[in-house]
Amino acid sequence: MLPLLCPKCGGEMRIIAFITEGPVIREILGHLGEPTSPPRLMPARGPPLWEMHDGGSDGIDPQAQPMPDYEFD
View (tube, rainbow, N blue to C red):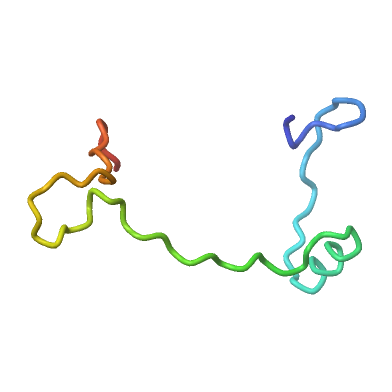
């Protein structure tokens, strides 16, 4: 569903204003029953297994992930 289409009639809607004041936004969200504060940040993940250095062992690690077939930018 496109965000700028009316859910009732399917007509095109347009943005006529932006609300930028924090207290007003929190009041509107509270009235709608939505959370008024951002979600808690989760801890960062560790590096992929293929970037981890092994402790000097030359054996094959069965949990190691293969290098991807493509490069990231």
